Image (tube, rainbow, N blue to C red):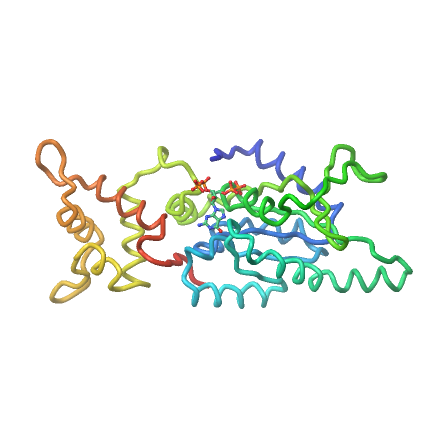
Length: 284
Ligand code: G4P
């Protein structure tokens, strides 16, 4: 499920989002907890203004807990409710409904004053490709929900999933386009596997990962690959560390030379699968 974004795609996605957002009370935005800024498009702040906002820090199982707490505070300061999540697990889903209700309390109160009772809160899920939108909708909605179909006064063709008597969810998520202008964003999205490997320079990616790891998680590379992060007078260059990984893991090409790309791919794969531990690449 990977995307190549062109201006046409973005315009279409944006128009669709503007249409859908008019129908809802609450925007549920998924971000990748390992790269909470690179995995979001700040345009959603403008598109979703005047709506209640809930940010789900998804893939929190792969992220560093202390960093996730710092990010939670960061988003809360900006007026969002925040929940850390592993969308593959159904465990946290009850709590989400409580937070949804809390986030929409003002609206529910307003309805009550106008004599409108028990009108469910309407929400939609948004996020960039691969952030876990479908996984989340499946876990959250589960089997218990019934699709309510078209509603009078609501745009034709929109399907709502009735989660319980309080919450309805638009069944198709809104797809946000990543902000590629900053080169680092592209690198981070690639590192987490959100964009295609084929279009990337795997060696360059691994060097960026080594930079992040030596800066934020000293000792992790040494523990896993037996590398030396420090030389006598300064810290080792990322390329030198990659070379050590290639040596220590016997990444050898046919000509009996060190195969850097193989070492790079190995490192990235172990990072993505969580074998290097819980790692957050971006800091608030
Ligand atoms: P999307 O709709 O936003 O495009 O994303 P989708 O749900 O398809 O999820 C993309 C990938 O992320 C899936 O993996 C999914 O299993 C994984 N994923 C979603 N939420 C979480 C989470 O909280 N933690 C972790 N660790 N992974 C999550 P996939 O590569 O498509 O398949 P697979 O790796 O599960 O086989």
